[in-house]
Amino acid sequence: MRFCLIALALASVALLPAQRVTNRGDLKTILNNHTTLDTFDLVSFGSGNQVNIYGSLNYLVDIQGYAGVVHKGASYYNAGARNYANDLFLPEPGFYGLESQKLLAGSASIGIQFERPMRAVGLDVTNYAGFIDVGYMAAYDSQNHLLGTVSFRTGGYPDYSFLGWESEGNGIAKVIVTGSRNWSPVIDNVEYDGAVPEPSSLLALALGAIALGRKRSQQS
Image (cartoon, rainbow, N blue to C red; front, side, top):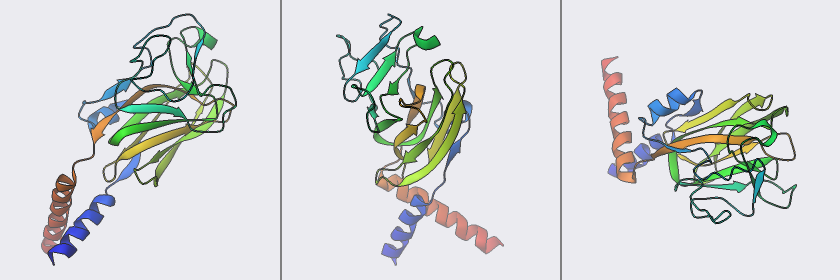
């Protein structure tokens, strides 16, 4: 009986809501204002050009003698077939009208892999000034199961779209943002945190949900 109850509880955890987050305010509320924010300008290069990055970008990657362009917790990578020699671009302020450093990939898709599954994730997406782009963000769990997608359309900088996703059950292990050009959408202000609880905490949460459901059934 206990085994069946545990199995039911864990199944209930997997079925906890996975849904779109429509704005940054809601994202912060979901994460109790305890977030990590990557703006890609912790280190400024400031030449008005683009820095080419080969391979992925995380807090350890050295770019022109500097590490720590992003925080510990996420790794950014080219998630598609390369259309350019390098994997990622770090456009600097003034490049094609952009006002600050941002990030994009040398293919139609840029990916973000998290160190641990996240409760919720949000980011801003645009493109170079004057370049229309349409596409979507896909969120995945640690088993590479698709949690859902969010579509966008941008007229290029300064036209931003906010893309967000929440998963209370399995958590978000990675997201991939795909656009309609040879390069990926330009991303900025990637905000995340809130690792999913340990299995014991998940079990307690699910058992509580089951107990509440039983109580409501008895009252009806």
